[in-house]
Length: 218
Ligand code: DX5
Ligand code: ZN
Image (cartoon, rainbow, N blue to C red; front, top):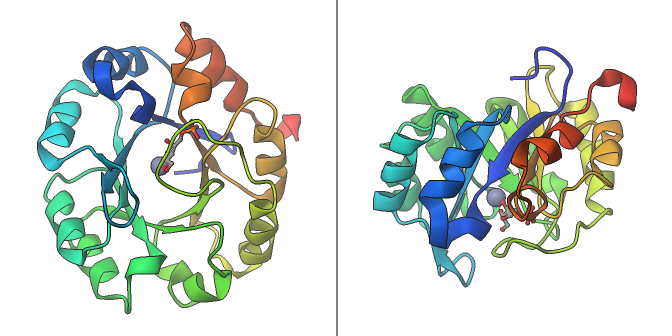
């Protein structure tokens, strides 16, 4: 997932919920690496978005691999979305008690991501970090697009990085734009999730190019 050293870019279409088909097709025509789908259950976060049937349709339309981010409370809901066989299925450390669900999703041949909220200590995620494919650092409180990036989260990225095996991808989600992507790269992130910075623009590709920075820009 991080072969060429370039920042991977995953586009969140959360802000385009009312014209989803058009936005997914716009992402299809860009160089983005993934399409990020923010599933919310109205319990883990207040909003309720991307029910299973909608993600099924999104998967049909998208030519980009799906990077599904589950902001849900129930392990059964995680299992349900695993049936979609996305490229990456990410759920939150705050909802797990052991590694059973990690092993289950892996057994289906799906890459597993573990997300961590800004307020959660990295000690919580430590026992699992080398059993998953990706760590998703939330750089906003989950639940809403268009919030401001929390730079203090980068201290957690730097603190965790030395404990990770080389092939575990570090992704960061929330408030990402052309102003903060460089510090994310310097802190050790391999991938950024970006919503409003890209989808509020007419020209998605122009914005994506500003996020897809290489080794030499940092
Ligand atoms: C927040 C979501 C993010 C968010 C990204 O709960 O997980 O994926 O929609 O959108 P921006 O880039 O607008 O913060
Ligand atoms: Zn997300």
